[in-house]
Image 1: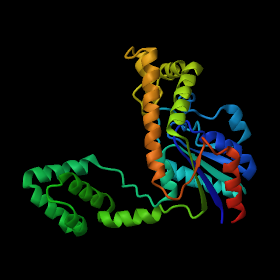
Image 2: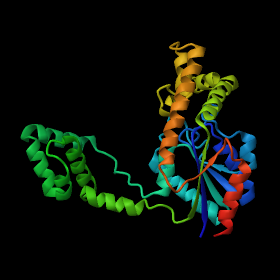
Image 3: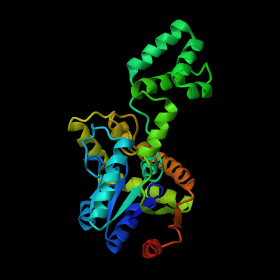
Image 4: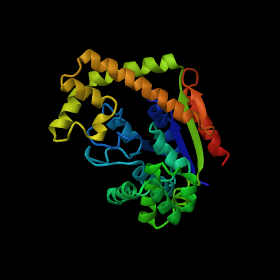
Length: 309
């Protein structure tokens, strides 16, 4: 059975360093599980691996898109699964380095993505409900999807309309659509070695604060300005991510340089806390406290797991 290594943890804890040190030992290739690193030009604020690091170890899902191109969890799941299989076919081991919890979850769990919506269908059902009332809207759902109608309160117009929308888009009740997606998006059958890196909260926050300062010194403000001058609007999704949105605020004169740094550090710490909360709910993760454990211990754990296959 082929192996897949996943390294998760909060921003700033050292996931990339762990992956870079591990990859040569296991013939690994790294797949970025970061929602910003996929974009070109957003290098400093996304803590993208440097060119010399990418020459040492092959990386994937980095510098793939222009900042105005969409990239969703569905796209990540599709591309990451394709890359995992291709890497394994080359006799190598994929290492997914994840900071975006939803992206990692699409690889490890049955994950259902609802079909794209239709504003026209929603509008038609909203109009129907306004003309005939909530009870009539609920009856319309009961005729098409009795199970969902039984589950939903007659006054829950939003969810009733969504269930009707899915029925019209797919021809199937919402419950059947979910069952289909759970099969279609089943987790990878590979042996997953799931590693989490953590650190005492005070130490992690010190690292995050220092990294924010370093990003600014490296030219985060200039990088952001260059992206905007290249014709990309400041309200694009990747430019609303941590670091870039703070740089935009300073460029617009909304905050001072000192306020930019303070807010960037604050929001990075809050994001790290959310990441820890997300990943720590998963009992499959083997945690290493980087305040105490060395990268050698992480490497030895992975090598032992691979030997037992």
